[in-house]
Length: 121
Image (cartoon, rainbow, N blue to C red; front, side, top):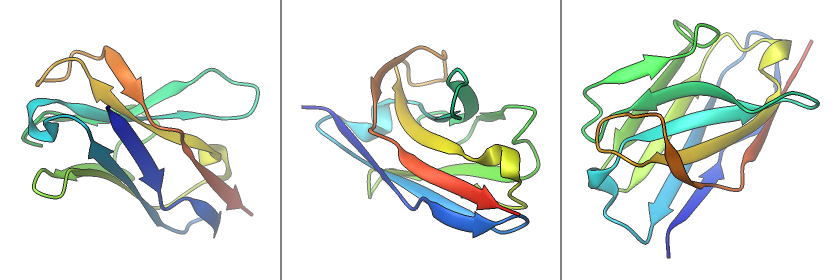
């Protein structure tokens, strides 16, 4: 069955960096675009970043553009989110999601369980 397992979250000071990883299994990883979303306490889940099956096309939310980088390794079946210059408002549970298409169509059919990122002042 399809599984997405995130890791790499934790507690970091404002201005610091973290890299999240998501390991995929149960499907042909290189056939699908992937994305990262996040959900802060009391807020709706929001889009962070996405990339195509090859990693050649990426897109970012305004809040993550210039600070976060999404990438993937199809051989390892992993997708990553490098987060720099973290701010307190980046505190959230971060989710890895599988897009329904090879190019990003922003419709998702599988989600990971999430990894907590907490940014302190």
